[in-house]
Image 1 (spheres, rainbow, N blue to C red):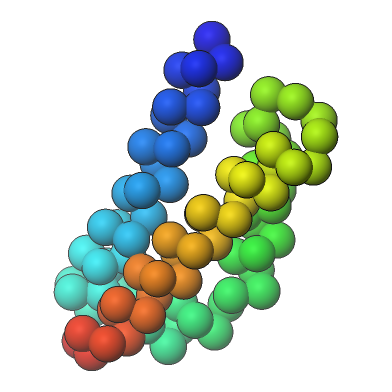
Image 2: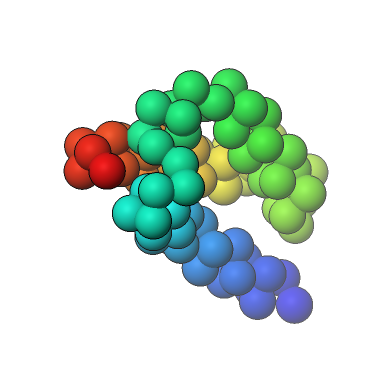
Length: 84
């Protein structure tokens, strides 16, 4: 059960930039809007990591929240660079 939850979390993490690019191309959000809420994204990623990690140690939570933040910020910068 734990491996399937971890696999699902990783799958969803890697979909974040794809969803951001789609939303940016459609024109629903801009890169500036995505980058302006980075503080809320940090809190949300840490909370999501705390809920989804199978153990209570902070290292595992950081290892899940870090890539999620990196992928979100990378996707937001890509939307900003594409400039639609």
